[in-house]
Image (cartoon, rainbow, N blue to C red; front, top):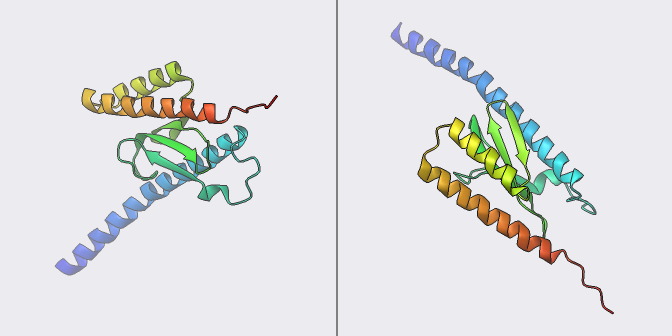
Length: 152
């Protein structure tokens, strides 16, 4: 009897956790599709003839893990192609927002608001903002590498 009760309890817990995993996977699939679509609109994949899904990774800025089951977080992404720039993404349960780091003032405002809404400690906030500043500077350096030199 006790063994039967334990098995029933385990099955019940498994059944309750399946919708959360499905919801998480659904929002993550949506994020990945939107990120690829966004990068396409930015011209990142012009002249690229391989599966774009293999070139894009959405990484949690705090943990450096790929997009997973976390209900919220700040992520960065870029395509694994030379001279592409970093972008940010905020995920909050079933919604997300793509941020262009080059629009620095608005990006920082959005990130600070997001972090305050999630009761992020000051130390963690400083660490994340420092990483975003590094990405901004990297984007600026990459833009110089795109400059065409015209020979006279």
